[in-house]
Length: 178
Image (cartoon, rainbow, N blue to C red; front, side):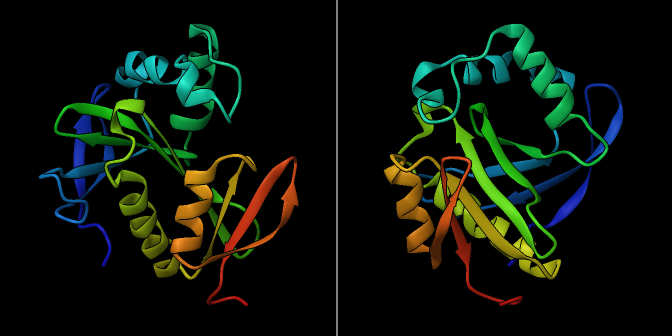
């Protein structure tokens, strides 16, 4: 139950891993994940990160310069920390997927507010758990204590609270390396 993967060319001509899953979330919506982001993602990423509702529990809304720096550091590195999420309407946000510690991957998501409540986060988290498991890793989600929706998804999928780190609740999925 992982993404079928293939190579696609985007923007600067560099191949990127492109992964798709269908049908998990209902509403006739298919989501696609792209490993990392490209320069073409700057404008939609800035719209996302400058939205006060989206950034409520994360950081103050980003300026364009902050978005550009974030895109370079987190989205366009050799091993990106974030992956673009697209739906039938285009850029929907991104998932967070990177090593958390020696045995775990950190999972998360930042989605455009008009995509909230549609099952995207739950479907994406399920798929990223599968990806982590296939690589022999456990999964961790961090969130602000007041992020009720994120905490609900973590608990629904079997993550257990295991403390706080930097003001964030840490949820760990029981599994492989416990």
